[in-house]
Length: 390
Image (tube, rainbow, N blue to C red; front, side, top):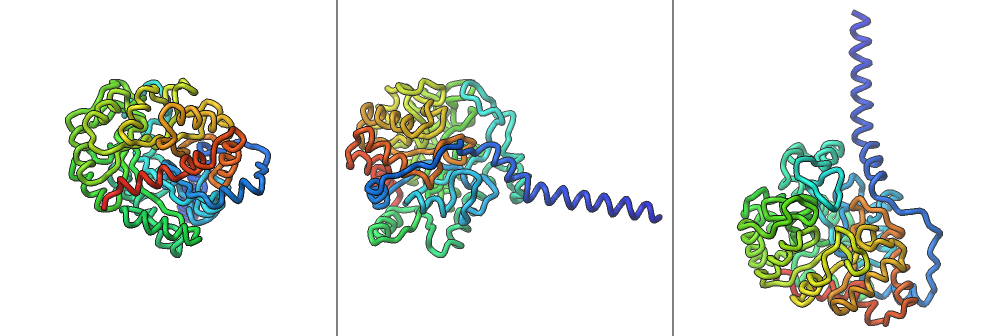
């Protein structure tokens, strides 16, 4: 009997330790494996550049920080983004993406939707059980995390959902407040689970930007990294049309070239490419042809240039700025923005606290002050002012 009690107590202890490991240790190990800042010497920012950087309106069109088990109000040495680092980098607006399904390999050539690493993330981080088997619930849960962070931030983080919210943010920033705003995006529209009404529900909750695909084909059409390479399905067209009606901005990042073309054919609103690069500088499977990038710009859209190898090939600040310059020359300065893909299983050479190195590198490469202001955030600011719902 004593032996049985001893065994039971030992098994219980092992279970408690396993649960504690899964809850407190495993998520950090998992994120620490994927979201890396490559070791580098501290960037020395010239005082006049820092002063200029500190009065910019800076916006980043894509981060996946809501995916991970971190308190984004606390500064961390894991990952790329949290509120403290956003403030150090003088970021006024951060688009927070919800990733709900992704194959473990995430290769740029060919993936199917048969495997999914986000289930492991959801279970290991003790997300609500309803989210373990529902992509819609995963999207809704990550949005609720954004609201919770904003509520606990004592006004330092706000959620922007309308033109009026955007106008208030700009006014507060102009008055000297270092408030940071979040805009919510879903990376791929598979959380709709084939139901148009789910787009309405997510919009009511606060969704303002919707990707269409991610690393695999879905019910809307073909991914840039999927199997079919097809364009919009009938359901995909219905989603684009309904998004236009609601005021949900379409994000064509990860969409197949045919899908991007189809979206531009039918959308009556400008679109964004939240995070990517330009093929003329970095000929990788992650980037669209220059001709499609020009069509996005011609339709009034903006393109966020990323900082990781798959987007820019050269992840040094000079390499990122080289892609920004090419994009300006290709599409015009009004259509180029920042799209870091921070915390999106990427390795970078600067986190959001170190963004002044981009400003300094652009100065070093002969950019004008106006070009720097626009790329660093004013283009995104004006886009949201014009395209968020009333």
